Length: 262
Ligand SMILES: NC(=O)C1=CN([C@@H]2O[C@H](COP(=O)(O)OP(=O)(O)OC[C@H]3O[C@@H](n4cnc5c(N)ncnc54)[C@H](OP(=O)(O)O)[C@@H]3O)[C@@H](O)[C@H]2O)C=CC1
Ligand SMILES: CC(=O)[C@H](N)C(=O)O
Image (cartoon, rainbow, N blue to C red):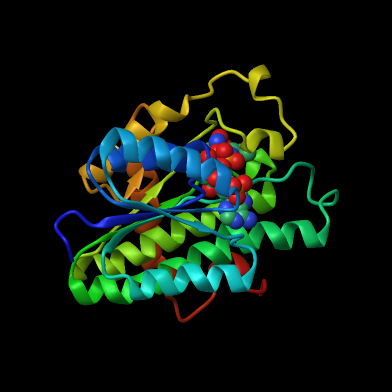
């Protein structure tokens, strides 16, 4: 793999993905941008080519459509120049669970989970073979918080976190870095899709600051990067509590509280 690998970024037409494109272009990486809006990607690519001199390809794809997804998977499998996947494309839908249609939540899963999984699966064997490369999955703090009642969106983001942590265990020893990035509210167009007025919210991070922080975590090879969390010890304690519980789950008998009273 080249010392300066190409980076394939999904959801690169706007928001967090476009900010990633800017960061990696400024570091001298060639790019492959993936999203549905070709005109937006062309405009971004033209500017970045002019300003940085990197080569940028554009793949117009609706990642909820199996045929389009297959094209991106094939690119990840076959293009040995691509050494970094930024699995960023994602969306949110408004309403409560019983207000959301079955078709709408299935579409959400197709983009936020199936596409993320299939793209990681397409590139991982090649990266493991090369003993190098990186997969970055964009989760969300919502994936830690069923209390937010964004149930299906949060479940997709919990999937992104678990997938990342599991892949880190599996691929890390093979030289492949896997990072989960968990933003909290960030000023992008996703809020329009969720039917929320972001300007009425407090505590919203600007996208540039979010991606700059995520890149610091990337450079440090953090497994999980939560840009807005002030005290990392809270995350470490959460992980330690989970790991302390695990050995207690392998038992021959049910816990005393579940045994029938004599
Ligand atoms: N903004 C926030 O507050 C937070 C965002 N996140 C996550 O960050 C990621 C990026 O979101 P953000 O930048 O905010 O959102 P935006 O809505 O601003 O951008 C989403 C990107 O995904 C692309 N996209 C959407 N649907 C599809 C599709 N079907 N096929 C291909 N590409 C698609 C869009 O491009 P196009 O329309 O051209 O296809 C766009 O480039 C998401 O995974 C989101 O869940 C996590 C936590 C907080
Ligand atoms: C719409 C949202 O909730 C946001 N993308 C987030 O993950 O915080």
